[in-house]
Image 1: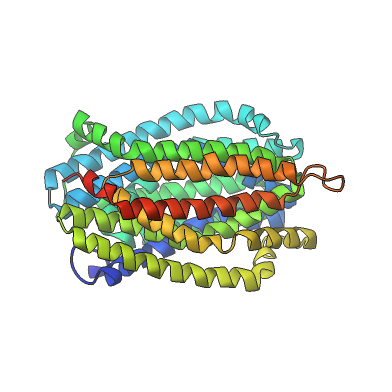
Image 2 (image 1 turned 90 degrees about the horizontal axis):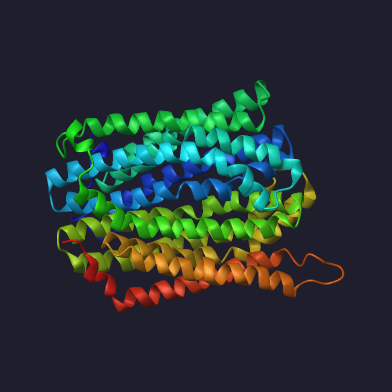
Length: 455
């Protein structure tokens, strides 16, 4: 079927090609977000608000351990899309083999190191004792099964680089349904609590990874899946590291900053922790157009630069970003109108619903600006310039966000609010998003990224 064939993004109307490629990826990202959201809803409803807070508090540490996969995935997407666009079969085959091998190595490292550093990090974050054991239990199980999630993320990135975003979507939908069913079985039926949610997640991830690998072994018309290609060659490892390292470093620094901010979040107590989890779960869905269009832009730019069509890259960047901003504007309106109903999905505690809704309204307009950051950064990454988006992310999310969060909270302290106003944390987030969008737009307009193309 044509639906499951790789898409050549060097031909046709740029906007239509980008949208057609983005839609399956967007649906897939929605499905992937359901992993965490289903976990939160089910533990919140069947175990309690503290269990909800525990799963959410584990997020920053989990994200920190995922940075290796982030780097590999970014480098893989760029190399695969450019080699595919330039029709270089041998180089494409070796790139995919290196990606698989490095993913397995990274998985083994995380499986060994993750459980050892989890407890110290939780204590460093001032995690309340009431949720400490649940957080630890959840993270250790996830780390043990890290290979499944890591392989799926890398292999689906390879499929998207080849222009096949539909297959990755189908496999993810299968895994998502399996994850939700297992969540209900393990938590609601067997009463396994937070541990049940973790086991459901890793089982579903292994299924999606297996399906993605099977698909790649059958794409013999584009590349060869041979044993010798699994042995890393220095040239491809170096190129993968060079392209992926900036994104990996960005994610590592971003995750560390989130850990620092999580410590501030924890200082406001279990209620605000739970509210933050709810907001971040809704945030995860609203951010999906930005991340999906950003990933599509990377593949689009990579293929067209591989085919030496820079004018087409510029046209797609402009029109694609405007479409993405329009979609986020609609989502922002939905948040402002139906916010309380969305929060009520996770909990029946009215105080928690009100607090979550108030925090969400502060950052709602920022989602439109995030489209600018993600789309234009995607274009730069597709050209091979991964350093510039890295620096922009560090400036906005770390150097600006973290001091602002602590500073604004400190300035808001009063006798009635001795810990400060928790809303200032979300004000700092909105300011950092706005700054990131402005910097990204200005840097993109300067055009230095055009000189970084591999070919």
